[in-house]
Length: 406
Image 1 (cartoon, one colour):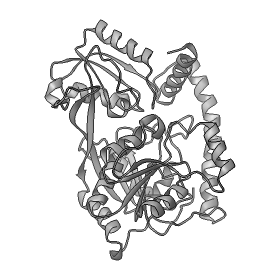
Image 2: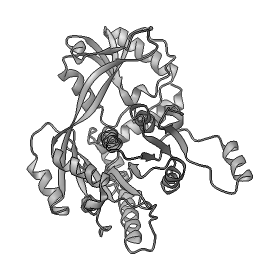
Image 3: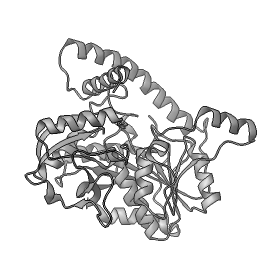
Image 4: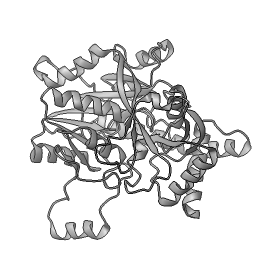
């Protein structure tokens, strides 16, 4: 990792620590006050934007097919991708022609010369990037972004498109692939394309952070905007009810259906080249009593590390990177050196991190990623109802609700 990259990463990690209250002292307090000033400005912008759409000064664009929005009020960490995967698979299994539309956060855009040449030679905008055409994955994680690539890899038969303009991407999915259902990934704040169902995810372990908007907190819009949700998914649940949180949700969105779910580890997958006939999969019992070095670049690394400890792993060391961090050869060499020094037998990371590491990497120690899937703990009937209403719209869809006042 070069010096400039190290400094940028250190600043981002420091900012995250201040936001989550992990730092004490005068310097973090002053830095937090500066962030708070920008947070007030961000709140004005968020409320104004919603007001403009609500009063039809800015217009959303219907595409003539069913649109399901999956998103959250906060940045990162709600476990959105497994929910999108579960919902898209359920729709596909019931006969819908599904396309997932993503903005491709931190994906690598085409080079400037290619974009310039397209605008010079074509009369229309370039088409969205096709991550999967339903038959094969066409882009890697760097070109597509982490989540779109994971979804494309895990959802055969589902179209996955990446474009910042998801109205354009949706129209392309309908025209090119004949899609009748669009799943808008991380789309709660994307107002130009209106959803028939708004599925709002709330991380039960840290619902709204410190209650502040970006950049002082993790909120993208005020908590009161819970009222825009058709269904609320409480993610990362331990199965116990949280009356206070449910009361807060009910206060802002009376009568909304709450679906409670947990992210459950399924198995470990060996990373890197495999010998013929080897699938590289290990049961979760593989971790019990094993000396492990953990590393991750996700919004909430604590939950991943807790999974490992709960499964009996002996955590010899860990390294945390910023969310969506793309690992270079130097990073990996340092990780292997640290793992060896700590006496670890193997390294374990998340599936989301694994897609950001070159498959050609040489592994002096075994590297595994932990595969997670969503399990519905409460409200399974509501989940089935939501899927059913999309598949059989003649029965009437639950209204996503008008844009509420901020």
